[in-house]
Length: 93
Image 1 (cartoon, rainbow, N blue to C red):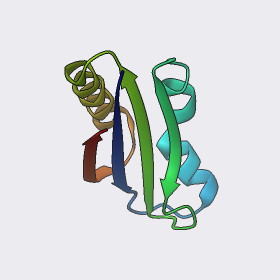
Image 2 (image 1 turned 45 degrees about the horizontal axis):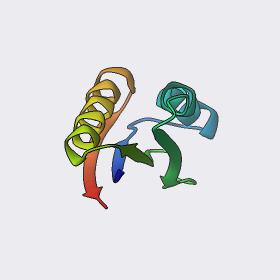
Image 3 (image 1 turned 135 degrees about the vertical axis):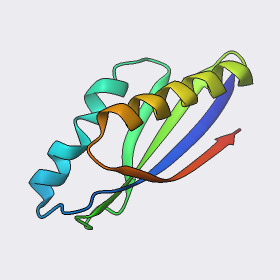
Image 4 (image 1 turned 180 degrees about the vertical axis):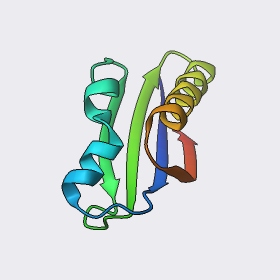
């Protein structure tokens, strides 16, 4: 079993409330948390309105599959989140 951790930091320019922040992040728990091989949580910038950090833990049978899933997550986030990706960190354990 191979495990990877993907941390992504977002900039949310003009975000004025925690409610708006939740709406702009668009339900990442619901989209990615349903997949058995992915665990997701908001891991940083919890109280900052114009920033958010999310972590994804991915489990798969090979490091190549973990990398592939992480790439898919990152691509989906670029298309669906109303904000900019500012920082991406990947770590294979």
